[in-house]
Length: 224
Length: 290
Image 1 (cartoon, each protein chain N blue to C red):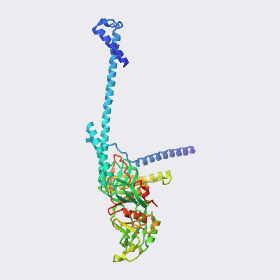
Image 2: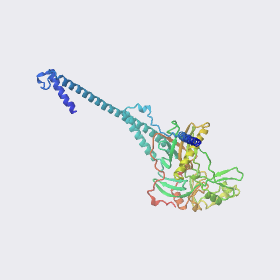
Image 3: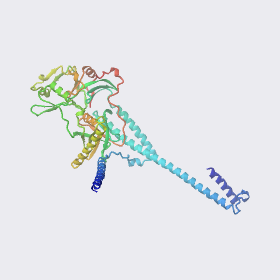
Image 4: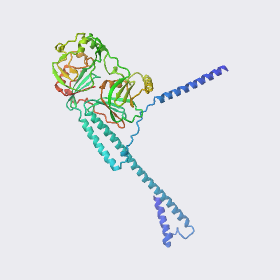
């Protein structure tokens, strides 16, 4: 008798448990339900009131406007040289018209963070994203070390500009694109393709030469 | 039709014989005879039924024709409505593309995000799911990104003062900075209390299918809980949630400049923009990638 009772109890608990599980699953399903249904396009009243003739005219006019806009937009991208930097892949492209004039590995910002000994100033070594323009071109560039370069080396920061000058570290050419950022050469060619710079874009000498010869002040630079 | 013609012929003969010239009536259809009433009535009745059927069919055909033309006009009106949106969106994009800065196009209908500049695609992202929570305002318009707000900040590798350039480079190499170090769940806070919520689902290549499903369920539950707890303090009037794969969400965060314009499109699918990086027809003159 007692065995029968316990069997019944187990069955009841099983049924109840299953029911709770089903309800729980349903509840979670409802809770997670998404609302991404795209509603059917509502026709504005001014279009809904149009007769067949007007609808035809409007459709033709809109199609022509769209075509014109697409053509105009296609012409917006510079037909001259442009520099594209894919910072995720550490890859640089020199575009000329509708072809790639040069492409190569490059190095971009390391993402490192440096805080000075007082804890007052912090630098993050990132390559900025967005649109820039080549501002100037320099042959045999000299690097004027900024404050962080001295702090990183644990050296005192000099007062005069001349004490900051270092030759032969930026390669043969440099193209400035604002806020102290350059596309320049490197001594550490084996690190090309990795994010190890202080924010500048380092490129191999051969590619740099090609970019330097093609780019002019004003050449667009896209970093993404 | 043959039946109808036959009955019509018969009817005309009966009528002729009945009402005009009785002598010309056919021998089988004598109007005066007592038996002629039945076939005559039958013929008239059947003809009437057939005529009614024919008229009804004609009306029905005419009705469906009218319905067809109404549908046609409706279809055309719908097309015009779509073309109007397309024209508005293209005009908005054109005005963004006139500016050299990159911009983002978020297409809720085609579940895609495109980072573009001057009408060319720099990067494209696939949106797995869109949750716009009945948002109808501020669609097909331009938003201005003010802030990228991650839920968890990426821990940057540190360089200590006096550590030196080479040690810093070595530290950078040890903890390489890249898209995979970016946050996967974040809000793109825009002007006028508008927010694009970027949320991540496990990427296809991550672990097994069951593990992905489990992770995905967990993330959705966490997101629901987050929304539930944040709803009291939520300021944003317009919130659109976009679920991307984890890798794409991170790459999007990585690629975005601090400020940019975002065009949010709904109701139409736009053609893909040509890539800013052309497939090179002049490969011989290019310096190959090393």
